[in-house]
Image 1 (cartoon, helix red, strand yellow):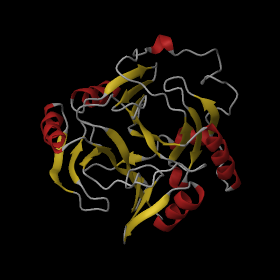
Image 2 (cartoon, rainbow, N blue to C red; image 1 turned 90 degrees about the vertical axis):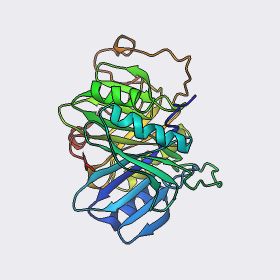
Image 3 (cartoon, helix red, strand yellow; image 1 turned 180 degrees about the horizontal axis):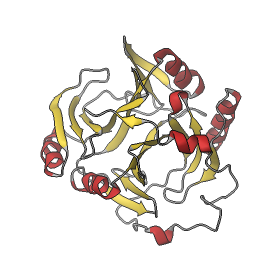
Image 4 (spheres, rainbow, N blue to C red; image 1 turned 45 degrees about the vertical axis):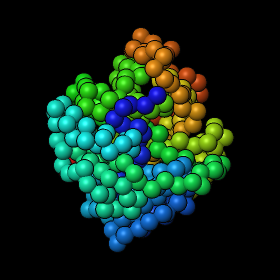
Length: 298
């Protein structure tokens, strides 16, 4: 089951003040692979089919340049060019050829709160997609802090065809494919990036990745645990420039028979914030970092 307009979250493009440092971290420590580079950008893939899932752009500050999605057809791009402005967004460019590595045809837009979203059809896909232990496969979700979650949720549903999987007291989880959520919206007083989640092959890979990160001087800032909505195992870290990044696995797969949950379905015993209740609680560093990375408007 997929949205008729958006078929998958492909990845994210971020700005980094030190491109060489970021490349070294995301390849040697986080275990992505470089597939292309320009003078001012580096493109990194996981083991999945997407040409790249993370684009690092040279920048004067840490920020989010765009969140990128795949669509099932050129017709979907044309439909999005109509539904986006009809629901409070803005089309910036396209449909037009993609000018960066990976190719394809894209529509570039802004949501009602100004974040840049890219919708891509016909980009290059890799065929060497065997999973590797301790290496991310893809980005499975991006979580955004929003001042007006209802506005953002309505846009995702009405303009892009996303479906609500669950709503907790503080978060809305929305899907465009079979992953329980590709975008989650967190109630907040600021509009910022909450975190980026990279899916690993299994629980063992999450644990080994956590050990490797700890050895490299990046301790677990929250976890290891198992979330409620999505049922996924998680471990959170702070990468370079305070991007909050997550290793996750066992993400729940859903279809149209999934019953949308509400806040009453996701309550924990006092003092617990995940199913297991054995991991480290979110650190003050993580909570502060989730407020700092802003979205660069188009």
